[in-house]
Image 1 (cartoon, rainbow, N blue to C red):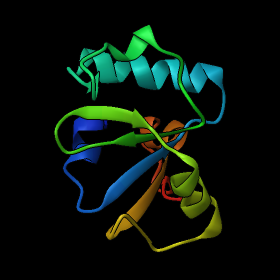
Image 2: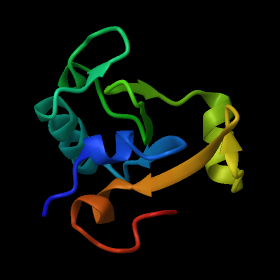
Image 3: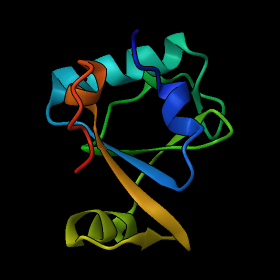
Length: 102
């Protein structure tokens, strides 16, 4: 069974996805678009470049992660914006590997 970005959007907490390089970022954006995700302003995911860390939201939108979110991601913080912070490494997640949380 292929893992979906929709499955990430349904998780409880704030989901930040790590994209290791440009190829992984492009694959993530293509999958998100194929699943019907958009950026918060309605733009298609593939219309914009990927960033190293992207947020997946419950309303099927994506957004770039700002400075505070990046600090939370890298610092080992347990929460972001009052929600549990889930750090997903997209490459192993998409490959079906068990160890995809950072």
